[in-house]
Length: 405
Image (cartoon, rainbow, N blue to C red; front, side, top):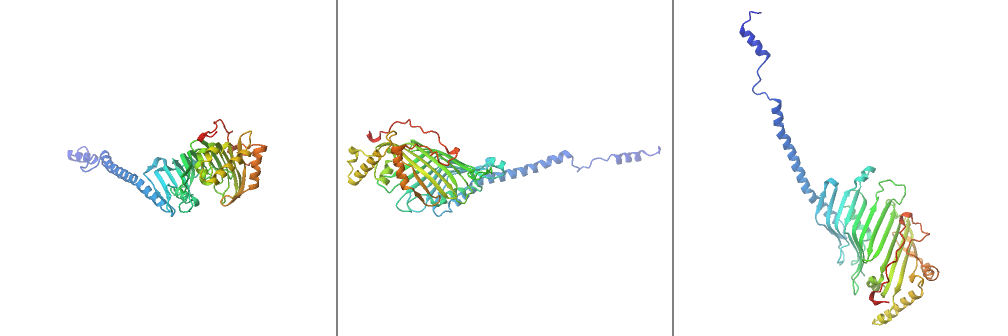
């Protein structure tokens, strides 16, 4: 063994430690060559997402336009559409719904901005629902001798169009700085009676918290009437009842009656010289059967002025104005200087209602000679604690519009 040749020892050494092949890949080089492929894949994905993100507003805009074009009664138009992927929301600018029949100069519904989004907190209750936010919405009701030129929003077709803009059930809605108008254009002077600065919230329409009470959803609203009077509205309702089931209460305080003279002249053929108006409405409906009352109250009211009304060319209107003035003066409560009554009503929430005429007349005498009604909910009503209003404030001075004394 010791006598092996140097050549044999060299061969054994070469067999134990072969030289690296010329075309072998080292680990470092393999990783370096895979990086360009990974980067290329990510680049393709990023480009695809970018194109999809850029095309998404166009797709949503097309969907919105098709939704607004389904109704035979209304036509819709919108402005820009913005997508907020991280919030699961999209925003529509300048929404308008116009009645397609007749000649109505104002849209039925318009909003500066409408935002529809997923309500993330509802996921904690295992529900996927949405929320809506309306910025400066406006609704216009128009009265006219013909149905074609009237605009009442009957049938709820416009409301269904707004619901269809979002694939999920709307559970809550917020209204910011809205307005509601009642108009007529078929009179000598156009009428516009309105609410402005409307702030409202509608919550739990889907009853995602599984409350046991049937009146699970709530509505809260405040507004200003004719740029002056304060309005409060509260309502609780059963969103799943087949027939309307709800309880609502409304109160309007301190409206200067001279600001609605255009309305009273068109529909009552008289005008106001001075006074304040308060209004309370309460209604309760169970499975469509509704009961409630309306309480109109006039304070420091003056309807007839000989110096002003003698100027009317129409003799009948002069005597009508004098009769209203005399009646409200005789049947007012002198301690509060208030003419008012309570009008009970009953009927079907989605149909006709009847008014108790004799009770209403009796309540005029009760207000005048027994005890004056107050602008608050009646103590014997079935309103819940959440529908109570704060005590009214009558610190405003008397109205002396048009020089009435």
